[in-house]
Length: 415
Image: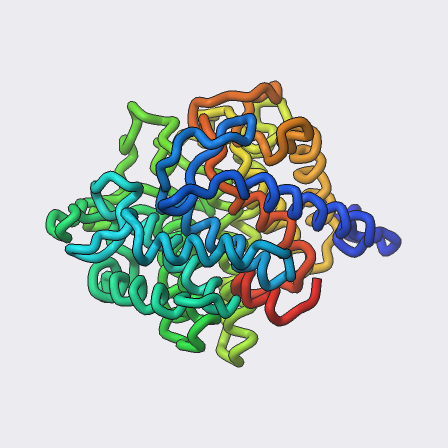
């Protein structure tokens, strides 16, 4: 951990315990919910431009699923109008063009294509949050996505998710990746909370163990993300496409932080159920988060966390995406609650200062999705404002105890 002299200061009052800060977070969250109402389209939810206007009327599955998740949580919070938006998304995922009526599963958008584990992870998260928010037809969606995961994506022998398939479920991709499995872990935790079935928690634990304890720990808490189906690392994967938004070349420090937070969520889930907690959890969580900051934050001399680094730890893509900063703030908060060490409060403050100064768009609403090292809007990785998922969660997680899923935390605790 960082500065022990800061951690030893008994007079420090954490931001997350100050009413002004908590009210500021809640206000920011409400602004995001209002901003993204404009993304509603007939088939679900679509993408916005920097002015907060729809790019076109086409729906995207990831965007729609994330909106269902967020507006389900918002309905639990008591936000008027949120339930109707969540219901619109659930119906779109069940009945609209995003779902494959012939072969089952979901496409990335309204045009048929490969079926991605990453996409299905967010459909699962949406279904679980909608179930916990008691939304109509949510259980129907949960049963449908659970069946697809069990039948198509979950690889029982490896205890991970298969990456992608052709539309008819042939041609499984010769690839194993961290990103889709990371978001599947989040979805599995939510499904465990929505159903009470510990099978989903066991799956979340198995995936996290492979990526955080086996792979990351063996690499000194640096996390390679790309492997073939024999788990041989692919160091050149997407070398010619370093700004890919889901599978960029090299390593992603923001994912180090996000995996760290997932370990803390799994720990909370195990503790709530009276289960044994592996003794490596906390050490691995801190190791990943420390490396996220060491390898990603201000490594080029400018504030903010970079998108990716290479195998020599040199910056690959220096632009700062919004989600990287949001997930870093989230995990700093969870480690603060877990340890009460003020160095995590210091990090939390540093990241939120950056978000407020550089990313929050006070003119057009929402957050700027990506900026360069000087804080200017850049569009190499994220040209559009896809959804409110990462940003909204970042405004809400610090208002709650550390829990296994956001929807469950909201339904159990007042904000």
